[in-house]
Image (cartoon, rainbow, N blue to C red; front, side, top):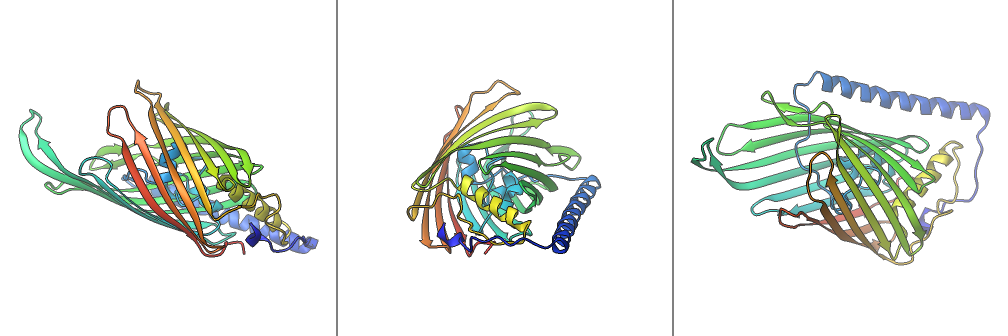
Length: 370
C-alpha cells in the first residue's frame, strides 16, 4: 500500500475554519436527504415501480450473502451504499448461458469522485430464447421468445464517519416477440451500510420500493434485505470474511443467506477498503493529510486468489438448500493504475442444472483520494 502514503503529519484547523467545515458537511447531508425525498415522492406518484432484471455480479452470486460486504462495482445492484467504498474506477462485463437457450449479458461501470461519493451504471440483457406457448387446456400455440432489458443508475456516499447511504433508479422492459404483451417498470432502491472498526459491517437494502405493477398486474415484490459481515483474518498474505443476510417479503422472513470469502497472497479487500475509507473520513475532520498505509497490511505480490462459497435456504417454504461458490484471480498489471480480475461463480440447485458464470473486470486510474 505504499502508493497511498502522502505524509505522516496532521494539520489542525483553527476554530473558524473548523466551524466552516461542519457547516459544509451539514449542507451536503441536507442536499442528499432532499434528493432522497424527491425520489420517494416521485415513486409515490408512479404507477409502475421496480427493476425487473435478475441480479448479476459474480462475487455476490458466489458468496450468496452480500448486503453488508458490498464494496465494489457489484454494489450498484446489491447495495448502492457500498459504492462509497470504491477507491478507483471499476468496470465489469459478464456473458453467461445459465440454462438451455437462455443468455445473459451485463456491462457495468463505476466512478468514484472522492468525498462526493461514487456513481455507477449497469446495462443488462436477459434473453430467454424460444419457449413453447400453450393455452389453458394444454393446446400447442406455437413458440415465443422473451427478452428483458434494463438500465440501472446508482449513487453511494459516506455521510458521517462510518455510515454510508446509497440509492438506485432502474428502468426495465420485458417483451414477448410473438405477442403484444410487454411490461415496463421504473424502480427505486435504497441502501445503507455501517462499518465498525474496519472489520465489521451491517447492511440494509430496500429493493423495489413499493413493488412493481404493469398493466394492472403485480410482477415484482418489494424486498428488504439485512446483512452483517465480519473480517476475522487480516494478514499481508491472507484474509477471511464471513457474511450473512436475511430478506423479508410481505412481512415475513423469506430467505437466509450465508457466505465466505478467503483471500490468498494478499490481505482481504473487505478490510483494506474500509481501513482506507476510515482514515480518509477521519482526516477530513481536520482537513489534514497523513500516512494512508498506517495500520494496513501490505500486499506481498502482484497476484491475488479469492475462493468463495455460499448457501441460501428458503424460510417461507420448504425447499432444499442451494449452494454456490467460485474463484477470482486478480493481477496487478500496472502498479497503482490497473488491476485485472477474472471471476467465476457457480450455483448448485437440487432440481435444476448447475449454472456457471464468468466475468472480466478492471480497476483503473489513481485513487480518488489522491
